[in-house]
Image (cartoon, rainbow, N blue to C red; front, side, top):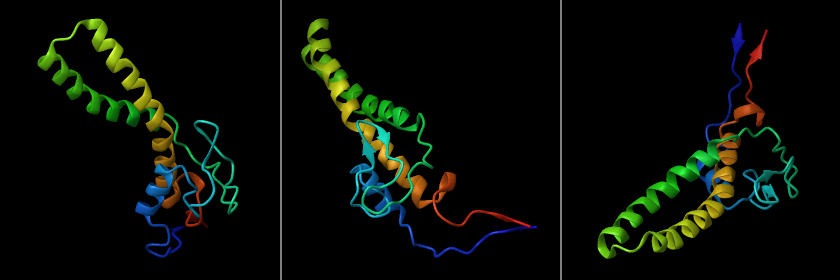
Length: 134
């Protein structure tokens, strides 16, 4: 028989965990840094000791980054092109650095956000509430 342990409804608010992840802070305490280096998740929070090695963000942050950067820059590229008809080299000089800068900025934040979601929903071994088998 499979039993589920009862968990308090809002002991890990997802909104707070997402915000802490977006700011690259520990989803549990909000004090310690979530990442070491550019995009490597720490094994544990340096402030509260919360284990973070359970995370499985994998390719999700990259997909979200591509989605958001594409949706932000595609209309801008079209607007600039139709309004000013610049030379191709001008478009490349303007939008390639914009794309790279936006991607570099967003990728670690999306990784933190996904780790925060996983932590708040107890996914992949974060916290209690696992299924107990008899």
